[in-house]
Image (cartoon, rainbow, N blue to C red; front, side, top):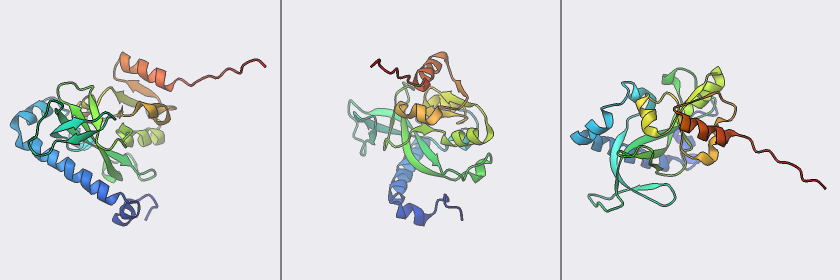
Length: 209
């Protein structure tokens, strides 16, 4: 068994098992709500790529309350407030290095976070735990192995519509660490300019003595 293989024992040892189970429960509660809500189903799935399930996992829908640190909490029961936002819930998986190849069925991934996207304003999104840095981490390793370019999408909904064929930066403080050295294809000019600014190396000039 590879050292990177995910097992129940390893998850328990790393104290991630309970956290992952909690995320799985929250994710599937959102999925169940989506398919119980005919209006929500029409709004969320009407313009998604046919292959979105393969590339992205099953999205759900839920009411959430954003927090000041860029995270969110699910609303409890039917309690709705002025800060409540109706969102698409997207599971975010992290790839275990060394256990990934171009065959999707052999990907070894674990659920690390949930991303909530405002259904009315796609550029507004929040993370449940604040731990996920990028959506589509599998493409980073595939690109590293195959030397392929990576398409970067401006927000999670654009990514969903593409079937998850690329990445979305969730935490721009880590953009340089994640993407520097890869050939990138930006979804639009505005995103391209932001990527260029984030990946441009800092140049320090030594002051004269």
